[in-house]
Image (tube, rainbow, N blue to C red):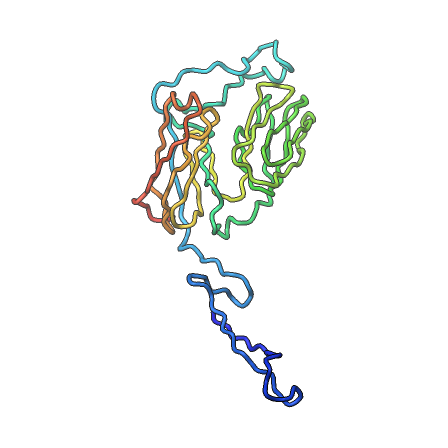
Length: 298
């Protein structure tokens, strides 16, 4: 945009009296810097809309032989606290849950490393419905809870005993609340900042209880189901960088690049991990996946 401004200039030593002289007008042309974007009269720059939105689908599977894990609490164990409730059923170790038939790994988080410039208008609004974090049989439900920054979470309990829900975030205040028996209304809590990693949650009264919250500032996050499957909808067309996190190994992928096409669903991507990688925290590595074959949108 080119602007012209008229400026009066005084004190230039004219050959006339001041009272009889008209001010000299100087034309100044203001040009934008090379490559600078045009700015609207409102003073704001319009954001370019994406070509459309697509869906990323896939499965996380276990590769190799899976060794059995002892339960955290065995049914009928009278030595645990509140055994009548907590040992009424066996409580499994949920740090690695693998489907014996499909080899799918549950509770794996796939998420965008950062919020994209454009978010699908249908998904931009923070959900008005509270996220529910429950306790039943001395287990947290769900084991992994993704939620949006600004979304209310209600910590409930279906157990007839007291619990304590204690979080360990990096950027948000801790939640350290006593949860009354059979509290079906729940204690409210809201994460006001996104976290870079999932937030560990424990019960200080029943030390085997552990779960994770993951507050993010965008809707592009998924947790694998019992078959290891995930689905992330409404992604802007283009390339996006995802991370993959699992409780034991932490970051399985730090730079998973996936290309999204408008009004289309990616061919299902299968991510395979063996016992060696899931037994420890791996050294972060780069992995790029370009999905050129696409299904028609649904």
